[in-house]
Amino acid sequence: GFGKPYARGINDDTLRIGEDRFLQVVSCNTHNISVIIRTLAMYNGERPENLAEGRFLCMRRANDISQDSSFIASPQAGCHEDPNFGTHHARDAWHLFKTLSLDLNLFSSAIKLNTQYMHTLWFHMKVKDPTSVEALVRYIEANRRVAVTYKKSSNSVFSFGRDHGHYGRILSQAVVPVRALNVRNEREVTGFCYTPQDGNSILSSVAATTWFLCPEDYDRRLDCLRKFMFQEV
Image (cartoon, rainbow, N blue to C red):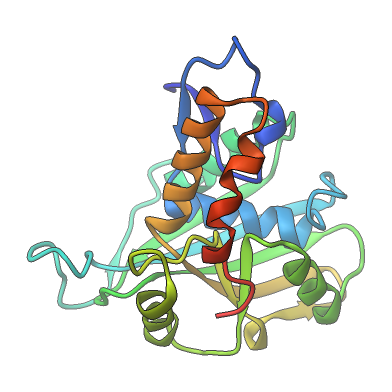
């Protein structure tokens, strides 16, 4: 409840000079859920009313590779603490899109896995307009903040970020393995994507700070980070 929820590229149009004194940068998995909704269900924002419902499973890493504690020996199921949204990820995404006057039907679950590499998101969305895998790939490729990959494992995606990212981080909001995309009955979109944790929320934090300092041309000032938002991993 502190400040307006914000994610770069999702609700920039709602920022108001003089009105928004505080911005709440949403979590890395909420970034992932939100950008998948906007890209694949809303056709990069062209059809904001197109999502009928969205179901998400956040498969979270155990701890960061820099941490010595909090690792787990086996998968650990999360609790559904919110009767309407399941976990805070869907609830936070709902609040984010609410700033755009959208009331989305979202529900999320979470499980922690015994890995240190990356969070992985499974999504299942029902849309109103018929679509296809080929169309979804075109929407992903048109969104410079979402990367495609033909890699299958999170460790290989993580390794790419370590080698080519900004201080090892991928600043893209999501990395989608295109071979895992599926469309059933033309209106059910299912797939996986990897969450560049830290990276996507860091980008939004830098964008928010730049907006506060230079609201008139913050887009131009962020251009220096584009090379770390990969189109393909």
